[in-house]
Amino acid sequence: MEGEQVNVRLGKFLVGGLALVSATTCLAAPPTPPKAAAPGLGDASWSMLYMDDQFAIYFVASGIKKTGATASGWFTTVYLEPQSYPSANLSGVSFIQGRDLADCSKRLLKSPDLAAYDGDGKLLLAGPDPNASWDKVEAGTAGERKFNILCGKPQALESKAPISGNHSSIMMHYASAMMEAAHDALMKKSQQPH
View 1: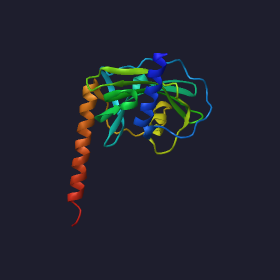
View 2: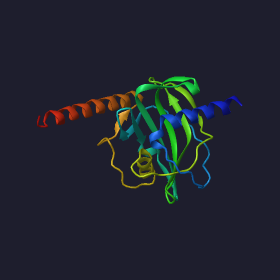
View 3: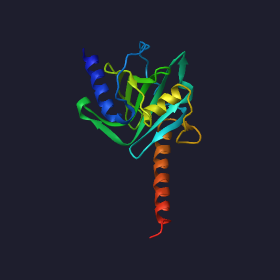
View 4: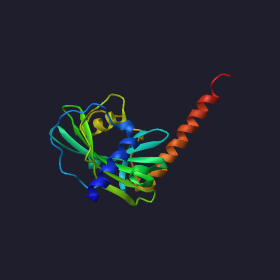
């Protein structure tokens, strides 16, 4: 019973924390493959899929698996500032990994397995999200970007080349990308006529 309570809490805090990547329409779809353990934050070749001033989403291309019209892969959300989720009695969350499943023929996406880590890469909480449902992929969202990667459709990346390293490497990469974006915005503003 205790495990089920933790899993429900994990699902609730992640829905709020990743609202940008979730869609709104629930539809029926093929059965979900069995749960899988999060790959962790060790050395890998990370690609930046999405970035804004609060979080970035990375993935490891070698972890994307496709069978027929169904694809799966883990995406890692890196927060610029550690997050707290009082409903889950959890604080200091710097990374969230979610396994996304895509039904490429029906344009559906769901995240049945989740894990949360602190800034040192220590696992704080992990498990299946019993509330995960198949959602219609909405155009222009981070969810659409994930869907495109999973289903092998064209998708521009935020970074030109993968970043090799562990959680510290992607955290530094994200912070550096944010500083570069701020610098570019200042330069653009300074070049505008007054």
